[in-house]
Length: 174
Image (cartoon, rainbow, N blue to C red; front, top):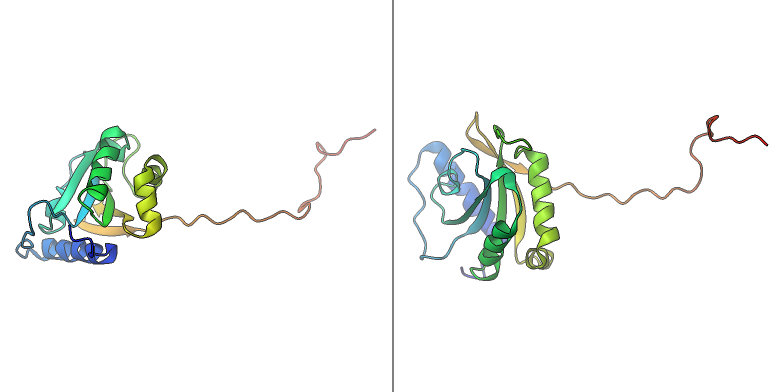
C-alpha cells in the first residue's frame, strides 16, 4: 500500500465502491496485488462479503462471529496495518445478526474500543493519525451502509457539593 494514501481517501474509495454496488455498476479496477485500501472486520453471520459491498475495492477481509476480538482477529488486523500499511480499519456490523450479542451499533463501538484496548499497534497508529478505526453498519433490508459515529467520552462533571437534600436513611439521629 502506498503510505501516502490517507485514511480519508481510503474511506472515500470504500464509499465510492459501495455506490457502485448500489447502482449495479461494474466493480472497481483492481490495484496491485497485495495493496488493499482498508482492512474490514465483519461478522461471520451471513451477509455479503466486504469486497462485494464495497464494489470490488481491494480490501483485507477478516470475519469473526459477533465481531469478537481474539488473537486471530488482532493478529490479522495488526498485519494489515503494520505490514501492508492500510490506513483504515472498518468494523462492519449488520442489522439482522442472529448471534446472541448481535453486531449492531453498540457492538461495533465496543469492538472498536476493544481493538484499541487490546492492540498497542492499532492504538498507536490511531493516535498518530496514520490509521483510522471506523464503524459501519450494513442494513440488511435496504442493502445500504450507514456510518457509526464513535461515542465521545465526556468527562464526568465535578461535584462541588450536595445537589439534593438527604433522605431519611442518610440522616442519623443521636
